[in-house]
Length: 294
Image 1 (tube, rainbow, N blue to C red):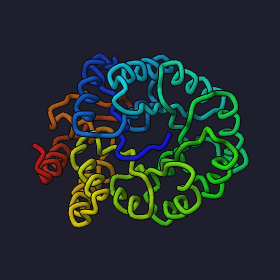
Image 2 (image 1 turned 60 degrees about the vertical axis):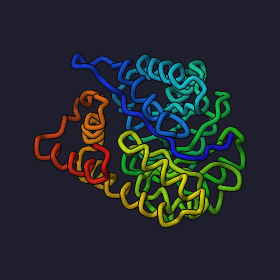
Image 3 (image 1 turned 45 degrees about the vertical axis):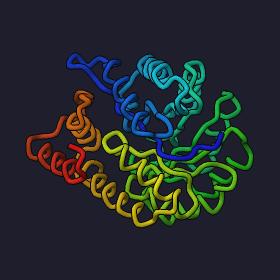
Image 4 (image 1 turned 30 degrees about the horizontal axis):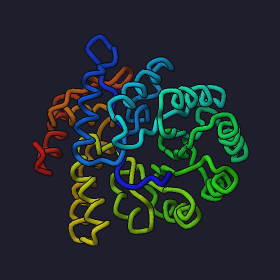
């Protein structure tokens, strides 16, 4: 399976009572597919996966697979702190019909590179579902070295891709150099979509796609069609929205406010994350208006 294009790690909508709003989730998925995204990624960081029970994670993947209905790959977030639970969640994703799993590097305890290798190796030997290695140092306080990625890719055919959310274009360049001929390399940062494509990567799994899927898809299409000036214009818009929503404010709260402004109410984050205050909401609204989407 070769993954190419723009994939969206969907938000998890919640009702006022804290339960998952499946109707809103389906609406969001339909909106993203209509905008031309290549696939949907439920239960990732943007989906608040650390705050979801195993049963909730499974239900979200079930709903996503049903709603996507073959219109693109479903890549289920399935990684957690321990190897045992990661295997269980990946099996759940397989049983739910996901096409692949996005597996974050284990976190909380400081691990050696060999321990991280063994974590992925044990998973790959236990579950027959393709996986993407997910590098997100800002959440895990660990950045998987490119040679370790190459080692996993070389030894296990079950690795079909890498999502790098470091935002470090030098790191991305090295990952692409080592493994892009064998697996898909995708950025997880909305401000590095065009640089990743230019270096030979296949696209991105980007949180801002929840809010501006048209711009992200437009960027990808412009690049593939050789319209570099248009691609650069799209990247500048994406980078600004990424700055405001992802870097300047509480990421989940800002994304949920922005999707509300786009006409899809995804509720509020689960605690301990709090909704934005009035000043922050105004700044998010100005960012969304700046790209002429409201």
